[in-house]
Amino acid sequence: MPLGLGNKKKGKAKDTSKLVDSEAVAPAATPPGTAVAPAGAGSASRLQFHAQLAHGSPTGRVEGFGNARELYAKVAEAFGIAPAEIMFCTLNTHKVDMDKLLGAQIGLEDFIFAHIKGKRKEVEVLKSDDMLGLTVTDNGAGCAFIKRIKEGSLMDQIKIICVGDHIESINGKDVSDCRHYEVAKMLKDLEKGQMFKLQLIEPRKAFEIEPRSTGGTLTAAKISRGRETLRLRTKGPATVEEMPSEVEEKAIKKVDELLETYMGIRDIELAATMVEAGRDKKNPDEFAVALDETLGDFAFPDEFVFDVWGAIGDAKQGRLE
Image (cartoon, rainbow, N blue to C red; front, side):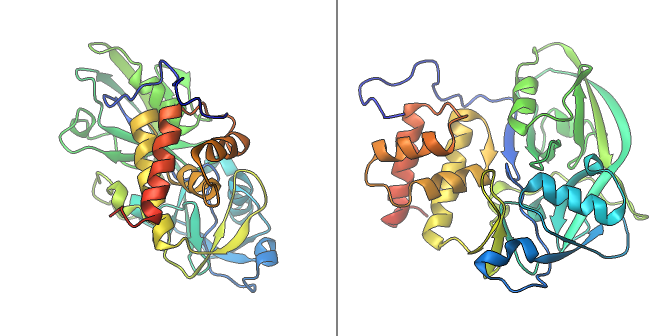
């Protein structure tokens, strides 16, 4: 995908009037937990992590996984439930805390809390505004859920809809195995002035009733600060790595913002993969080829690739806050 400097793609222009944002926890969500095995680069598959069900359970151990789906399967196996019952995982808290979601970089001493499906609910909504006020993310294993509800938005006025709810269907169409960006597009494409129906599943609750939350801000969804982390990749085996440098973290945050501007999604794992692809590249053409080889499924506009390359360069030069 070499960049044609005078031949920008058409029809892929910036779209800043999005109905919803879409933010991925990680295309390949990463396992948290307490490291029981040594943290050598070759020992990732032997690491053990502690886990509990968020609504209450004994402590279990999970190990021997290399990607998000395998992680959820191992957690499900530990507690005798179906993998599809797990909506998302939080780290070091049983609460529905969107700032603590299991993500792309997980410290080796983190503890997994798995939130499983609870009560179903159905709601009809009149789309009276172009903007619904939802941010959608997914767990990397086929479950899209609500990460944030913008204060004062249309959805904020409907108290039955909560942060953490899995979006199971839209107008009767099953979206339970769709990625976050697919669900976001379906919501965006709904006609203004029309009624639409959502079928939702809320996380199973413990005995206490927790207050409705609008979720955290994106800036609070930081990459884990542990000294070493286990990173699950969309392609290739899980690896134990040092944390990204401060420069790389700034670049990842900026690229994540560019993903929203150009493509209407937020995806820290995708942003981290793009920054990694540009780490040793000398010019934007080399970077574009690397992206095509690594992320060929995405049709990135040339303008976007230029801006990402610029963001990586700005980070290296200390020009990003």
